[in-house]
Length: 594
Ligand code: PEP
Ligand code: MG
Image (cartoon, rainbow, N blue to C red; front, side):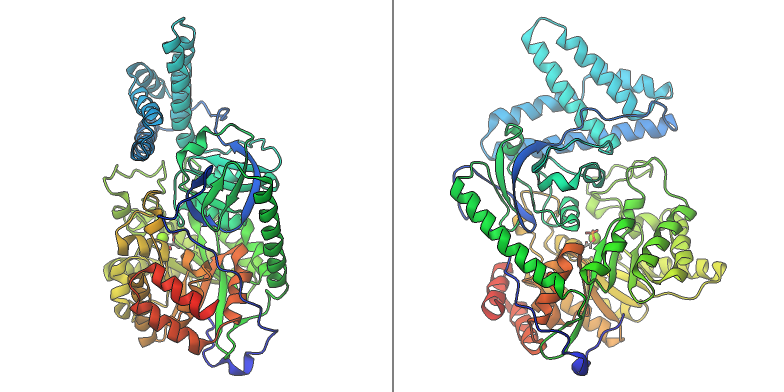
């Protein structure tokens, strides 16, 4: 990747754009006003609209199943995930002294163990039906039976059974059926998958709110990719708001105002106008390079998670793709895509970017919070510390080989590079690299850059050893933060503290850059930190060469770089490394660069 440390001669493209306003993250202790529900800022911006609860009442389900063993495993895994979700909701409500709602979720958990429903579903699976079909038949017929009884308690149980039944069904089939969303909707759900958002008419959606997740969870990534404001980990009471309630979502502060006054609304409209105007200015110069006032060039590229996004990168000034999350090809289906299908998808993106823009394809990163029903992964007590990322693909050489071959075959269509997620040890890197070399020789294609994601502290700490062998590093700050701080990135209760600006994370980034420099390798950051305007001066000052942000954020990141000087950024980074926590780091940045 081109890194121009001596780009003085090249430094005068366009006028430096004014610095963008800083997003604000509420400290947890700050009280919120009456009627305002708290969550965490997941995607910037403001949305006004009406609550639309996304549920999957009418999922269209295929009757015939694959192998009954596989279907039964899928059903069991959905049931245990549903249990865990309900546990989380219940715990949270208990802590908030909302015993009534907590009891509802406890009742739902009991219903998941109803032997009549489970036996009937299992029998249908044995007879060859899909897990989703068998489950749907089992819970709906039981609910129909209960609602026919005259006893009010039984009829209440029927409603609960339908509710929890839909939860499991959703886990089994995702939300791929199109959903009829009214105009100006604020979509409210416990969680959203990529197929949920794919099923929405995005022109009608003003913001997303989920009770699960955090600033780096997958719903946040989805929302930022779509340019929609989002608040994750919202107080679960939002689920009880009547559909159609008018609310204001503040994706910068992480709040949802459920009783906005006319004054609140006009203030929001004024802020939206300022934001729109700023975005327009940034977009107008987005194709100019991101060069600091003292002539240091930073590469700004995009994170994408769908083939169609490749065509949008150049329009926002993206100088390539720093992270293609290849998981999208593997999710919401019953079998893995074959080599031809994958090669075609990668090729389409490479061609959309053209020969000059880099395309870094990350190999499959599932496990942890992203299970794949057709991969036989044992239920784990700590999935984030378990078989995920490259550990999982190394253990399934056929799956890995197929993807590597597809990437290599597509490499002739553009400037393709490949990287492995979740590398912890040199042995993993060497095994993965050896597989790439074997396939490359078998296919007879030219070498391509092969790098690693640095998202486990172990890799950051011995970056120098990795840099002897790997062509580049891309720092995944989302995972690096959760592992450095030992805080689950998907846990809404920890969300305000999982702070990638914590000096410990910054020190790991510093160490990674130092290791890379020792061997002339380049370093990118592809975690959400790269799109955080507070972080940009620090990352530039630490010597990061490339920032890879979600598509809508690229113009703002470029504008931010243009407003900075490398010399000042280096001093900012030095001070940030000495700070005590993320709040102090933010204060340093605000004081020096706002
Ligand atoms: C990361 O961990 O920072 C990253 C970019 O990967 P993902 O968010 O997909 O885990
Ligand atoms: Mg990661």
